Amino acid sequence: MADATNDQVQVVPGPLQIVMPMLFTACFGWAMWRMPAFLMVFSEPGATVDALARRYGTAGPLDWAALIGVLIFAVLGVMTVRRAPMEWEDWGIFDRISVFVGRVTMLLIAALVCVMVYEVILRYVFEKPTLWANEMSLWMAGFIFILSGLYAMQQRSHIRIFLLYDMFPKTMQRLCDIISTALIVAFAFFLFWGGYGEAKAKFLRWETFGTAFDPPIPATLKPMVLIIVILVAVQAIANLVKDWNKEPVVHSAADDIDPDEIERLRKQVAGD
Image 1 (cartoon, rainbow, N blue to C red):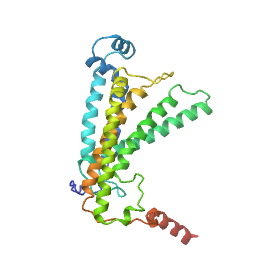
Image 2 (image 1 turned 45 degrees about the vertical axis):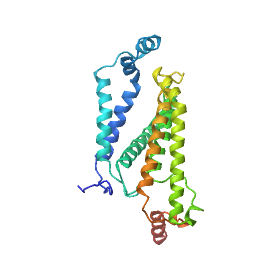
Image 3 (image 1 turned 90 degrees about the vertical axis):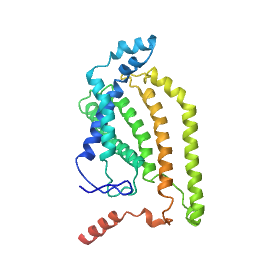
């Protein structure tokens, strides 16, 4: 196995790149679904706790095992994640976290497709639609939308306008980078400041969607937005530090050309 450092993570394909995100996702999904059982342990007795107890019961050994598994597989996943050939090369600890989150997001996309295909088959082939597939799709799509932003920030693949940026000298480019990072941090701070109270309230009372399946979409997505926006701000700072001494990159229309696609077309034309 190739040695990996903080500055350069080598491409090391292997089953861990799939197994660790799968185990983390499985444990996280179970722990998230059974979260009210944990909330009852740490919350004061009252009407809300009594209502949760009647619906979800108390936390059992499997629930606690899943919660512990979330922590274990998160650490192992971050430690074992490796860069794919097309991904950003310069890595640090925050990059590892972001890329592992990206791997989990990729698995959620595959799971979302499976849920949608399952619902389509049951609905239009067997005429027996489910009560849960639509809400589950919304729930998973919400997580995908939120988590993918962190991966996009780490890969520098978010939308950027280079028309003026490429015309500036390196000093001005650094100033632009500082300003953009400061704006991201300020946005994250004020979003967290303004949304913390509502997110905490929805989480503690485990607010659900109000449908037949009744998933806890508000209770889970509201806090997740705040967590991810803080991680995005941290990743933006890490990007600024990592890219500080890099040579200026001049962008052109050629950046939108995929070399692999061009090569494939050349082979196709040659074959014809």
